[in-house]
Length: 68
Image (cartoon, rainbow, N blue to C red; front, side, top):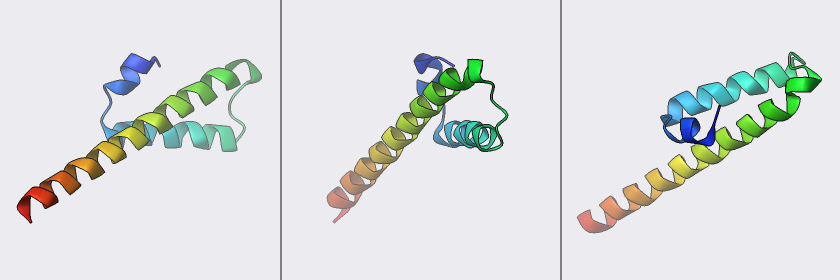
């Protein structure tokens, strides 16, 4: 999955994919040949989720500040 594809995902979808990769890694279902790719994808998904959370937090703070 490319960075561009990940950037277009909604938070819930990115989190679901991240959990799937995590489960495959924990269950040792990833071959050595695919390990690097899976870890890179998981890292991109985690960064995307963090960015979405930070953006949402900022937006909520902005809304609350203008309301108050």
